[in-house]
Length: 263
Ligand code: CAA
Image (cartoon, rainbow, N blue to C red; front, top):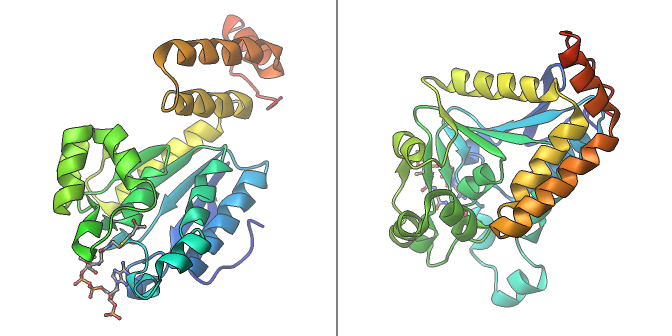
């Protein structure tokens, strides 16, 4: 699945253990129409199934990560079409099946659905011209792929409310200060390379432990602190049943580098 060619994506494995997906619909600033979302779904599923891949980077072009859902595709939808087909539901699939860490490397516009897609990343990195925003209010609608929920969790209610109600953009600098992005870079290339380097580092660890890390951090989004901490402890205890816990701790004691079994 990893080697397949796509019409609207460039998919590669540029570093050991790292899958890279680049959105490639330049004429429409990577507007996220259904064929692209279906391909993205396939590409991510391919990397999820590929045991040699430990982490994934998703990026766009220097000009646009993605300028949103495709407005031309949406403009004539009726309520019955949207509700009947559960329009945008396939977008949620993108992340629910993905157990491997996803880093979104954002350069240029990440607006509407593009901002929402960026926020589906477990880690967001941004280049100097990254521009985030939820401009749906200007189109007479609201965010439809998780923006009102993920942006609010990421930057707090007052800032999210202001962003979503005004449709104003969030600059890269502001996104950094508000903690929407984990790291800022000085050029688009550094942003993508930084994401690839982080993905390579993550892929070098025990994939069992990496999977558990992602699972427990994500639980913090849904659970209260007490249940969350209990959940974490159960998973932590579970890892003492893995080979990699023995390998990792024995290597530390022997002052050697761990050679993970991913078991
Ligand atoms: N859908 C469809 N086509 C889009 C698009 C989108 N979201 N964004 C850009 N394009 C197309 C433009 O129509 C244009 O195509 P043509 O050359 O055929 O006219 C091409 O991409 C280049 O765009 P511009 O000429 O507009 O480029 P610009 O540099 O002048 O402006 C921009 C860039 C500010 C990003 C502007 O394109 C823009 O405002 N785009 C729309 C942003 C937006 O509203 N996104 C939210 C969509 S709604 C949504 O996402 C719902 C949801 O929550 C899931």
